[in-house]
Image 1: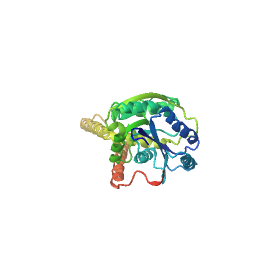
Image 2: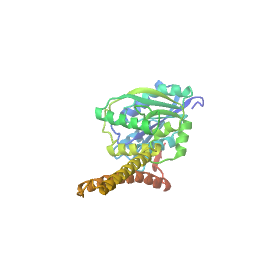
Image 3: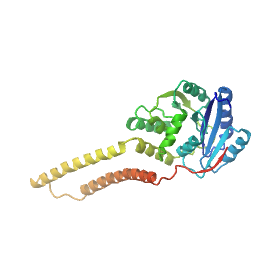
Image 4: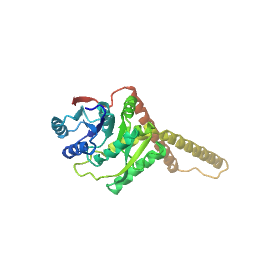
Length: 311
């Protein structure tokens, strides 16, 4: 390899993508014609798939030495798979793209041009999505809340398709934070970013494994990792509850002294108790999320376990 040429590593997390892989790999390989002055490395991370994804990747690797396959011991989640890919990427810059081709790989041509001009973080931001109204609503709500309460200036449509400099890769790996959102972590680092808008395509093949449970976990991880809003929310609700309880107590005492109220039944008391207990349980749940993450960090377990590397 000519040392004056740029090496671009592309990290692709794979989880039940056997229908997409036969189309994804050629699209990525065709980038050599689109960006002829780059040498490529394709880092596929099999995140514990139980279909034929791994065997298809290994077959492709036999035909193309630029393909590197990282097999994780089980499913650790897309964020951990991306961290594993970044760890094994050796390029001067590293791109991240999903395996389902909802993001256009050809956009890497524009990204690499911006990188050559000195931009260390180039983000493919979603100007729109070819998805249902409900999916758009929940995605837009998530990114609105993330920008409002956690990361100011965060791209409106979010991003998980990007290109970053090797320096950024090293900074992300040095943090070694579990239960986090890698994309938000890259944004949090604060380096100057440039946005390239595009329309995210509808998934053509296969069924998305991005389940509701995984979406909820990402939502919680994002706010616990990057915002003090949950704790501030508890403090605010606790203050309001204490204030209204005090005022109500004063009202009851004064009303009893001056004979304005008679002995009342249990309905209002039970309603008040259940309401307050509900608030307390919500607060305990939020505290529990923080405590669990503190415990998980203190145990110092890895975010993922690599079963085998094929290169």
